[in-house]
Each structure stands twice: as structure tokens, then as C-alpha cells.
Amino acid sequence: MPAPLGRLRALLIDLSGTIHVSNQPTPNAAQAIQRLRKAGIVLRWVSNTSKESTVRQLVEADILKPFYLLSPSALSDFPTPSSSTSLQDLDSVIVGLSPTSFDYPTLNKAFRLLAGEKDPSTSSSSSSEAEQKKKSSTHKPPRLIATHRALYVRDKDGALSLGPGGFVTALEESSGVKAEVVGKPERKFFELALDSLAKEGINPDAWSQVGMVGDDYRQDTGLVVQQLGLHRFLVQTGKYRPGDEERLAASDAQNSNPEWCGESFEKVVDWVLEDEQI
Image (cartoon, rainbow, N blue to C red; front, top):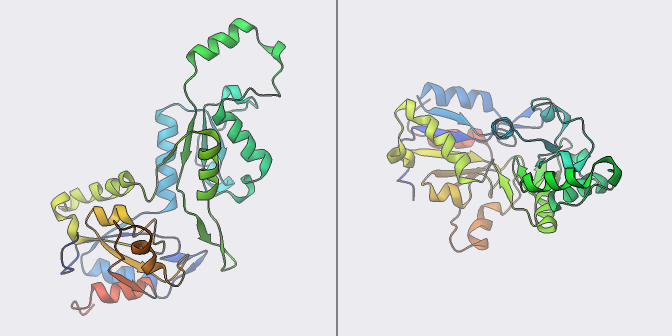
């Protein structure tokens, strides 16, 4: 459990939906950030960009040959995709927020790769039986890697749209391959952000003086953040829906509701700096 609020030393802050919605900043967000910095509060951004950066590092470190379900802008940051069209030459599926990838043919190709189906487009005469056996003996189980599994996001038109979470679950259930999620709400993702605070003198015994701010009650202020002992601030912008602040405790006896919920990031800062006169 977090300590009484007192004075926070650091904030982990979600970007999309909290600091900005699409290309529009939330009310007075920039000024609020400056106030936090003036007060000496350390800031760390926990965003989609940092998630995709972590996935890219994983691809490079494990020398993966993925089938990508990523937007063109996200894909540009990754190693050049394999030019092969054969499923047998690929070893993983990477899923992010990519609406144009979530059609039946594309998802079915991802499913077939994960399920170990033979590629119908590859003729049996294209490789000898001995070559097929050799490939089979060195074959590693395919991997399903997701940047995050948010069920919905706030779209450019202001309405909610499907996120990647439902498609990740569909691929898991159909193929039997458990997804590796590198972004929120995975504990390791938050721990990496918290570990980076050590150079500011904020060690694990001081994590109770750290807060997390976001618009997604599951991803940003859910059970993992509660277990880490962080203060939890839910903003009513982005993907927030009325009643979200009550849904955590209602869904699981282990969960408790965020300790603060308000209309915007600026209001979080007003509350955090209430006694600071900044």
C-alpha cells in the first residue's frame, strides 16, 4: 500500500490520453508539467513509444524474424522485415495498434505461423524431405509478442475504438501460444521505469513516494501498480469512461480503486502541489 500522500518525489505519467488526446494537448498540460519540474518532482514518461522501443530491443537481442502487425510509423523503427513470404522462414508475431492489419487474411496468417501450420503457398517440391526434417529438428516454438493489450483507445474522431488487446487474446486462444506483453500493465514494464529513478536517489524503499497518472483504469492504475505501492491517479480524459474509478474493485477482490480521480492532468498537479503554492 502507498504511504500517506505527503510530498511525492516522482510521477510516472502516461502520455496518450493523459497529456494529449490525438494531437491535442489536454487542458494546460504543458504548464502543469512545468509546475511539477519547478517543484523538483522527477518525471518519467510511460508511453507507447517506450513500449515499442522495448519490443525492438527484444527483436534485436533474440535475433527474431517476425511477422509484424504494426502501423507503418511503428514499423519504421524496427529491423527491416524479412523479404520471405513463407511462414516457415518466420519465427514470431509482433502485435501493436495497427487497425489496417486486423483483417481476416492478415490475422489468419499470424494464426497459422503461431499454430505451426504448413504454408500452403510453399510447394512441397521446393525443398527436399531431408531439408524439411532438418528445419523441424532445429525449430523453436513461435513467439507472440504484444506492445500492450489495451482493449480500446480514444480515436482521432473523439470516440473509442478497438485496441490490440482483443486481437492478442484471439491469437492466444486460437493458437495456444501465450503472449509476451512488454508494455503496461506488466509488472516488469513499471519496474524498469521505477529502476530508472535510482540515479535520482529514489530507491525501492522510496517507491511509496511515487505516483502513476493515466487514463486507463486497467493499464495505468490497476492491480500491478497497487501492488508496487504507488499512488494512483486516474484522469477523466482519453479513454476514461464514467464509472471507471469504481470498476477495478468491482472486478476483483484484490483490487482497490485509485485514490484520486479527476477531470484532467492539470487537476492531478493541483492536488499534488496543493501545499506548494506553485
